[in-house]
Image 1 (tube, one colour):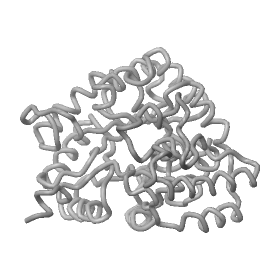
Image 2 (cartoon, helix red, strand yellow):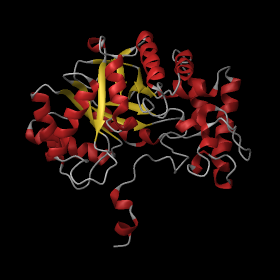
Image 3 (cartoon, one colour):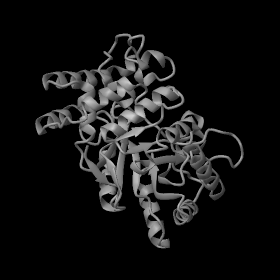
Image 4 (spheres, one colour):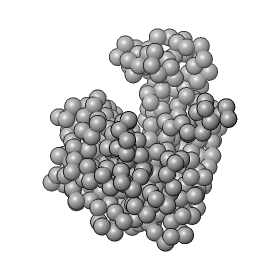
Length: 340
């Protein structure tokens, strides 16, 4: 396993990281603990979760699994994307950040969180409010470093400027989607990360299952596939829809390239995320131990320049071919805001 610095903090994290989005929801506690143990044995030292995963169960399970291994784990969690209509029980206010971190610490059974991340941006909360609160938590030892997730480039730049102005803790990382068919990160975030010495943690390397190689344009998805399970709910995964034909034809070209290169499409997709110098860690989110082992089997693969050039010819750098693959929609894109 290769280890890389988390920004300029001096802390080292593994090139591959374990995401806990399935723990306590799509993966049972027993299966989740097996996945965590296997990942740690493989050399992964960064585990990422959120207070919303499994309605808090993910944090609880991770805390239980690493209880006797805490010193070997760089533990990352997130706040701010809580799905509740309760007033002041979500978001990024000073009040809620303090409540959220205490709740996460209890579930994780730890005295500190190595990396505490703002899950999504907030239009109506000043970065001064967020950063000054997080700075206090660092001083108190409850968190060590701070980061963002799903942020746009200008938001990261704005936050960095505010940290400099107040001489307080600054965000050291950004968590963003990145895959062969979603290369938007390369357009702007990669250079911003380089400029500010930010670590980029990339997730969804298989684009939500699109790069598993299971789907063919115009044909029904296998009954046990994610596309079949979510049919009617997540249209971007449905290979039968006419509007998805272009996307699945591109994926078919990638499948052919992988076959001609003597590798599988999923392995090529995982290795691709590690080919960009701005990427610090690629997050895996397995639901089963078998899925984790499949990730591990291709983790040592390095793509040659010829394969990378061939990928560029199919999906140009900086391009996202699936406009529906967007994990966060800005407030200013709402119908009300667009009609003012």
